[in-house]
Every structure is written in C-alpha cells, then in structure tokens.
Length: 294
Ligand code: NAP
Image: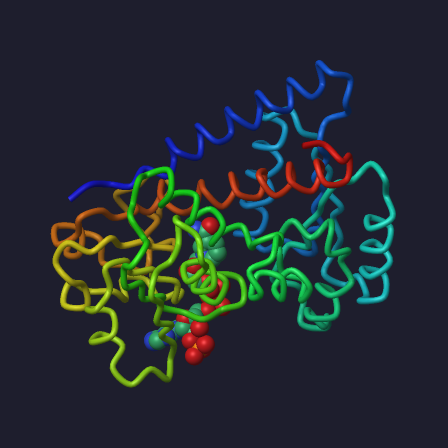
C-alpha cells in the first residue's frame, strides 16, 4: 500500500503558482485577485475561508473577504454578487456554502458571472463540463484529477466507482473521470442512497472515490484487492487523546481498508489540500482569461 500524498503535491502546485505570479508581476502585471463571500459563522466554513486566504497570500495573489451576518437578506447578497461581478479588480470569487435557510442557493449561484465562477457551481460551467468544453471545474474533483495525474495513477480503461452524486463532488467527479482524455477515460459508475447493492458496485472498482459524507462508511469488504481509493470525506471525531479534542477521519475506514489498496489518500493530507490548490488554479485561469494572457 502506498499513500497518495496530497499535501506534498499541493505544495508543489502552490510553488508553481507562486513562481508564475512572481513572473507576471515582474512583467508589470497586477496580481490575480480572489474574493470570497462568507455569511454567518459556520465553523467548517470559517476554517476553509481562513485557509483559502492564507494560501492566496502565500502565492502572491490578492485575497479579499466580504463577511455578513446570518440575517443578510437574499436581495442584499445578490447586490454584493453583482458588485463583485462588475469589479474589474476581482478575477474570481466564491460564495461559501452552506448559506442560511432563507436563501435560495440556486438563485445565488446562478447570479455569479460564469467567468468569475472559480467554484465552478454555475449552471453554465456545469453544462460546459458535461459537454466536455473548457469550464471552471469544482475545486474538489478538479483537485482529485490533478492529484491522480501527478501521482501517476493510471485511469484510462479503468473501472471507477464514485460513491455520492452531489453537484459539488460526486457528479463532476464522474463527468471528469469519463472524459475523453489520457488522464481520464475511465468507465464510471455513480452510486447513491438508492443504489441497490452499493458494496457489490464498489468491489468492482479499480478506482473508488468515496464522497458520501459518512465517517468510516467504506469498509474492507467493499474494496477490491489492489484498488486505488480516494477518500473525499472529512469529519471531526471526538478524541480525548488529542490536544485539540478531536481527530479528522474520512468516509473510508482507513485502518482496515488501507492494507488492501494499491494506493489510498489519507485524511487529513489527501484530498483536502488539493481542494485549495485547485481553487488557486481556477483563480489563475480566471485571471489569465480576463487579462488575455497565455
Ligand atoms: P452531500 O451533498 O451530502 O452528498 C452526499 C452523497 O452521498 C449524496 O449523493 C447521497 O446520496 C450519498 N449518500 C449519503 N449517504 C449514503 C448512503 N448511506 N448510501 C449511499 N449513498 C449515500 O456531500 P458532498 O458535499 O458531496 O460531500 C461529501 C463528503 O466530502 C463530505 O464528508 C464532505 O465534508 C466532504 N468534502 C470534502 C472536501 C475536501 O476538500 N476534502 C470538499 C467537499 C466535500 P443521495 O443523492 O441519494 O442523497
């Protein structure tokens, strides 16, 4: 069994982006600018946004945060989105999810300019992705594809089973894996809560992607010997032996599953760091498109 080291690979990507930003600035260009909108005080969202801001600055990009309390109205939020859409200084931005219950998430996502939609959630980008056209791809599946490519995992002709069909992970992951290119070309099955025999489907996988949001859901009996397992899940589990009082686990029962695998992503240090790296890649892409570079 080999660990797929998302931390090291994401560090390499960030170094490449930092070098590119520095080179652009040497040539007199402005730095790329990523903005984020955060509503409320969800703990996981706060952590993600803080990490995004830190990483943005570390690679030399400009980062700005628009913070609002839970009681901001949908109309006011749409006005902020409109402002960022029009702001020439902003290359791309995200609206951090989840949003408060009184918001229509689909309406909010649809209000983002597709050319600034670095989260890749806008229907135009999802449509372009489905058609195999150039698109902003949601950061987590985009990061996973980059991780597999850089780690040298063969996907072409392999059977890939994706557990979960969300719009932000499972569905785009399945689309990307089935695309006609040398770093995809897999035969893909998507499983969800209505799948008749999920364990039997999972056992067929050469590459198993677990994105269910259920800690330790994937057990050893669901995994074929020699499979590659990508664990997207991230959960805090209370652990009194840790100084923090918790440890992070994924959707895979790592201890039991890892010995059966050819390779597996750990939690933490697998998919998580790649999500941030992919968001930086998407920001660079939006910047270049806007500035007509490359
Ligand atoms: P989600 O929107 O809750 O979707 C979960 C999917 O799993 C749904 O399609 C659901 O099926 C399916 N599912 C749930 N329980 C199941 C069960 N018992 N049997 C079969 N299918 C089941 O979750 P998500 O946003 O895709 O996220 C998935 C996980 O990835 C979460 O743990 C999340 O925290 C993590 N995540 C990590 C990162 C990262 O950077 N590492 C980024 C994003 C998400 P139905 O459609 O039938 O309901």
